Length: 425
Image 1 (cartoon, one colour):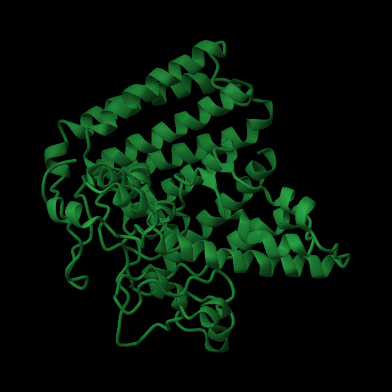
Image 2 (cartoon, one colour):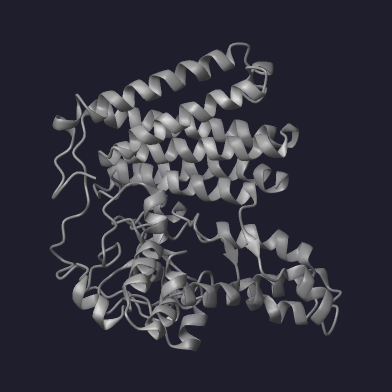
């Protein structure tokens, strides 16, 4: 937990700098690749995922360490060879994990957040799942376990393998010559994120594109087919929590409504999007008919709301960094409370960006939780006064302003801010 938090202390500022560089480059190239609320939603999604990982809110069915101890057929001694095998093994497992997440109904829920943005930029790379509770794909590490690759080596390589997937989420880099035959490039991954029929369910590879070519899922980007990004059933929200659980909620409803017991069982493991015939007829779901003319989800917001939403994001990032830098001295209860406070903060301001009453409800719960935290910690915000003498007072001021601003933007300012298609959330 502490080690992962320390890594994130360095990784997050690095990602933010690259996102800013991409934005500057896009302005110079006169190519619009960012929309403010979409970017805030993407970054907020990344924060929820990182906090979930730091809190350890995942249940590992079979650990890699257990597999190495029980099934290893040999023990490799070469340090260099171990790290090479670990990297290739992670990439092989990543291909299949990625592919299963796309083609099996229940597994799509853990991945939909990553595809939910209708833009394609470095920020959307950070849209990662918070709904992945059970880590069941560790079994795909079996080839590495058979070779006896130590768990410590895999643990070292895994973050590097993950971070290496960040850079190719951009529209600013075209095809890259001979590298197109070796590694996953921005062109390859644009295809993967597209909902054009010819591009759907292609290019699952994470680092080496060879896996798609071996297993028949490769598709080059075509000059005649500009990628359209998003999902075929638009998520219609900026709230990463709602996006994370939309698909599983639909599966639950469909399973409940199905008349056949067999359909109630198999819906979870059928191809993504499959629905029982009787449910599909009685409860139709609108999907995009014409991807080329589909309007992107948007909320018309005042300058005030845009500024406030941006401020909320940066306050959340600052509080998260404080959380990570002090996690070693926090009790297990305080670690959970701080994590859930940040979760509520993100839920609240992204709901406000949607124009949803959920923002006010979340703010009420958030301020209640905050005062509970203060009451059990001697009226101190997780020891912040030790590094900032007036830190707790500033936190209380922030909580008050946050609630007041949410009420203001949802009520008096709302009529001017939001002109959504259809009903308000």
